[in-house]
Length: 361
Length: 264
Image (cartoon, rainbow over all chains, first blue to last red):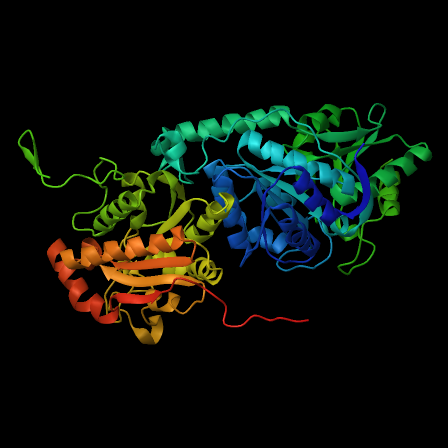
């Protein structure tokens, strides 16, 4: 049992980074993640770690890429519109095979959208930008889990030498909960013997970190094909071993709710209310959005009357659920249009989810 | 020292940090000359094992094939940000420099470079200015001369629509965070020696922890200029040097703010 303190979700990102031994933070102000950059500006220098306010999010991600290429634990945080600005850099880091953690405290889109909560970055986080690669995407649903997931994100990034995205949102970032501060333990990681740190320690044998597998791959002994095969072996390994989710009451479920992040809190409430009314409703909460718990959903596709996906979008994760279900049962969406207000402050409420459950029953 | 190897005479040994591989650059491209000066400077300063080069995107990046130091390849224009990440990642203890061309540095990467200079980042930038986008086939660069024909200014650059060539060495000298800024050329042995001296001075500013340093080097691109190597160098002398004067524009041993707010 560590120290218990009251934290906002945004501050928990900072604490998670400190506990994960992240040494370098680069960021740029944007609502609703400003508490994060301010946390790092305030706390990192106190403990001898490095904070730098970047001139843009394009720079943020490239600053992170540089620090990561030098072998240190580096991260940035941002929100939706600027997460878009980081996409070229993330694709490059996937190609460079360097680890990093990027937190997207989602706001509304498209464009500058709104400064309030939303879950509209599911696709860009899980699909990424140009080229064949997949981000590992982690989606916490509480302040405690945010703190822990940041530590997991750094571990997975180093383990697979790959960017990891942590997807939270304006609600999770701004809400406060009691957090048990404790270091999450992981298996040991290999040395970063590939990092560009100066070749003196390697007898002048140089290290070479690049993002052009089809142009410069030969410099590190790869063909374009062998590079892509190696990367996809890794993606397959991640899919086979890193899927994380939480389930509730699936055994006798006739309807399964699927929801992640802050919306999962609403969905969990609706699920327990449904059970209290005697309705056979279960819930799956994906924690890794990529890799997605596709096999688990497929397993239940033939057993249930239907799935209801609850996400604060016009429908993104619902596509992954449909893909897993493969038309074996119904898949419905409770989404953006089910918010209680038409303005940017509108939210999906438990009653709305519950009434949809009852309609399907 | 002159040595005999079979039927070939070796007139000049390669610098230690220059890999013994053929340059992939076009015949007459002066980027190779800049690469050689770079290796000589790295050798003279004894920094080969403690140096990380950040390569931009363009022909200048070919130096990564021939220069034996750790490398990180940047996205187009982002070398100063990647370099800052590496430099700070290694807690300022290693030497970090970027090699960038006019498109990489003065167009898509202008912001990254200027903000590295604004921060007084302890980085050295080697800026190869050949007045065109060489790799992609000779299109207009920010440094293309007014009137200069390129693949995207077939009738010559018209300033009314395409603007004016940007003077990077002079521009960078205006920033308080910049310790050293110079423009050089490699059109003669004399300029070769001056370029080497300037590069050494620029690296020394970083080694001494003074601040940001940049050396702009005029470089001939014979294919884009549609001239043979000799005529391309003559073109540099006649035209590029008329637009871009050589010289040192800043050389200070300390960077400091003009004003610091102090409130009680």
